[in-house]
Length: 145
Image (cartoon, rainbow, N blue to C red; front, side):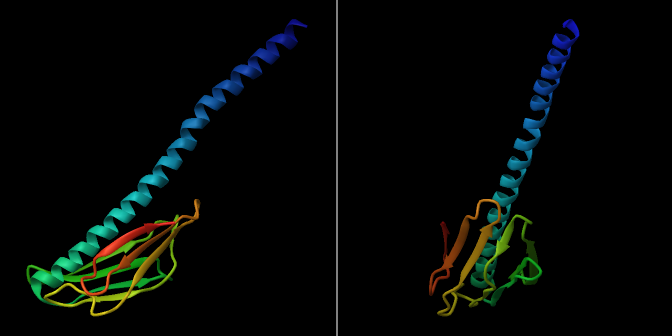
């Protein structure tokens, strides 16, 4: 009888220890995924702004091309007279829903009458994030569904 009580106590201690060890691991993975998504959206907005500023300041066309199959977005713009190309890879947890190609007009940074949307879906939460480009000035507006 004493052995049975000792066995049950031992199993309870092991169970509690396992719970305390495994919970931080699950929370860390969730936190890491959140940070990865936030970093991607921040970089997208930053590179978009760089491309738009390059078109305005350098008076040369800037391009943003999306490749859904490769899971990347290429930003081409001029900075200090030099052509810059930045490639932004999508995290594994985000998929691109469309493949817009955007040309920002040199001197104005506008999009020459094109209405483009950059649409992304987060796989785990099924949240859709859309960046809509305004006609004319090409300012982007973020919509989260």
